[in-house]
Length: 292
Image (cartoon, rainbow, N blue to C red):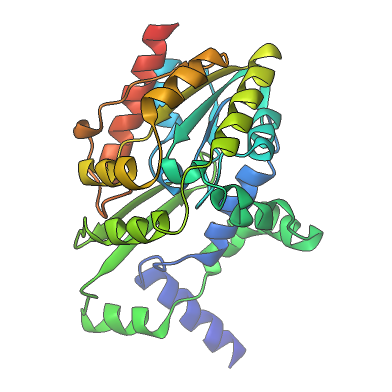
């Protein structure tokens, strides 16, 4: 019976597509970027628009092939001083830190960084499992019964979200079928009705930028592209003043990068479709190459 069960499991694995949500791969993805085994030439910081929006490998392709980077973006991250310290600690001395700014990442709510701290404070056994075992256990990730039935019957869900994790980059390729460019607008309108961009969060950020540039790090920042109507919502409801932020960031010792959001496409009104994420990554690399 045990042998039959093993054989049946192997057959299912060979015939079924990968699980839609591979929990083991997800664990490896978050823990490898949170607890890096090496220091990187450059790191990229920001929220979910960042971890789904920039591939370090594609960026290096047009910037400098010799550079090795990591996307250190997290869901709902805030650009707090402790988060910037983590970015610096993950970077080689005098390395480069890229900050993908969103208005939400500058709110007092975001800098609580609950999702980031959850992985930063992972217990020792769970950390060992995530860093060293999940890369193997991901091949045995369980399926939902509905996934198996859908595959066998040829049915497909009307609304599907796809996310492919790349733990060695910290980037996740994502898209949604069908696309819905309104759903995120409703969410952010609700968020900014409850809290706004914080002056103290921004001032702490600028002080940290000055500290890190004094230590020899190179810091760049840019507003990561999203849908035009989302930008209009953020500018009118969040309290974010982009030109003032840009001036203060440059004054603190960093360099602001101008990115044209009209060149890229979102699938939910907030996050870039993976094809646009690849394009942004390569465009960003070209921009950095021309600066140096």
